[in-house]
Structure formats: structure tokens, C-alpha cells
Image 1 (cartoon, one colour):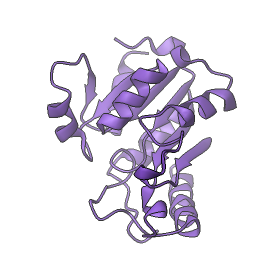
Image 2 (tube, rainbow, N blue to C red):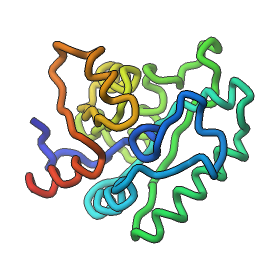
Image 3 (tube, rainbow, N blue to C red):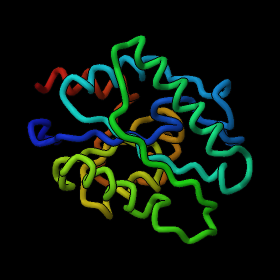
Image 4 (tube, rainbow, N blue to C red):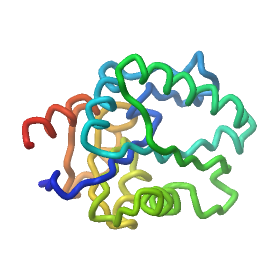
Length: 183
């Protein structure tokens, strides 16, 4: 069970949690499409928590798109969030190819460490919401709580993590409903 009174920062994976994911990668602002209810959910989270994103963006390292295209995606997300009176407080992304051996690609914890430093929050004050095994493993290694959402790769991840003790929600919007109930 999550003790919401201790959480200061909610960290969200992007693809599959906030927006629809694609095995062909999200390569442009046009391809970036929010999951129903996710933007309103972020606006609700903003009322009580700092909200950050930690996202692997290996499409940059694979030369499928560049940082300018990523910025355009994030600008679209920010503009859509404004319509819901929401915002993202901080974004961390890993632009590297999986073979680059960087320290930031999830399941490594560098992005979560940076977010913790940004908000002066220790792992016990952070919650990571993701849809993949790399998100789960990152949270476990960092020592923060984790919620698996069943959007994106969430159903496949649930199968892979069978036997693990997990907090599971249907979507980011459903997680926010749960938080509201437990306040």
C-alpha cells in the first residue's frame, strides 16, 4: 500500500503512460497522441505533487528523430496540458542507443537520481509510474515505490513480472482516482 502523505514527487514514464506508444517509435509531434484521461490526470497530480518525466528516447540514438523533434513533442504535450491547467515540472530523457552503455538509460537510475536532486526528494518521497520492466527495475534499484499501469506495454509487463508484488492500475487516470479516494 502506498502512503500518499509521504510522496512529494510523481515520476512518469512517457510513452505508454502519458501518450500512446508504438513499436515503430513516436518520432514527431504529430505521432504524439495522449492516452484518454492522462492530461487531466497530470493536472490533478499537479495540485498535490511535483510531476516529472523519466523517459528512454533511444529513437534519437537510432537516428529515427532528433532532439528538436523530441522538444516539439514535449512542447505539444505542454500546450495540451495548459488546456487542462496542468504542467510537467521537470523532464529527464535518455537519448542514447541501448548499446551505448550510458548511465541514464532505464533500468539504470541516473534519471531518477537527477529528479530527486531537482526536488530535494529522497527515494521514499518519490513514486514512479510506468508500463515496462525497465521502469519497474529502475524503481526497484533506486528504492522508490512503483505503480504499473496497464496502458502501453503494461499488460505484457504484468506477465513478465508475474509473482512480483505490484501495485497495478488500469491507467494514469485510474491511479489519480485511487489517490483521490485514499486522501
